[in-house]
Image (cartoon, rainbow, N blue to C red; front, side):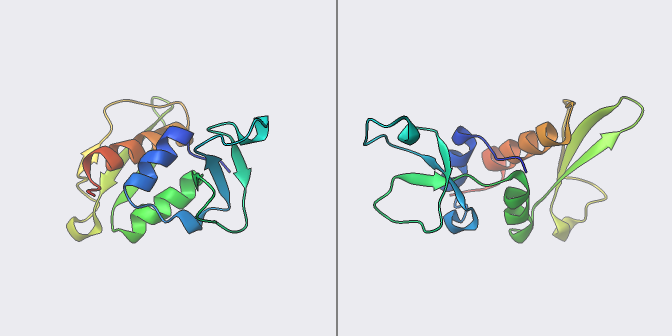
Length: 128
């Protein structure tokens, strides 16, 4: 299970990612001298309290599910001839035979391709 980064989690929250979907959170503010509460530290949480300055630390699969619920798909795929990963972005209303966007870069792992696709969607497709 791979979690998205602290910076990507902040961007996801800004774009409306449901904070209750994740049972892991990142610390946003350090109100204490304890290293446990260092900004950007990830820790499990059972209940999200308003007075604790945290943001959800979702997994890649949770983020991809959220996009699917919004009818946008990020499809990482492996290209055998070059042994690299790529991603395509499509909206089912238009069909996925002709993706809206295909990565021009290649990636060494599924996770790297998925993260790049997530960043593209946040920057270009999800409006506030």
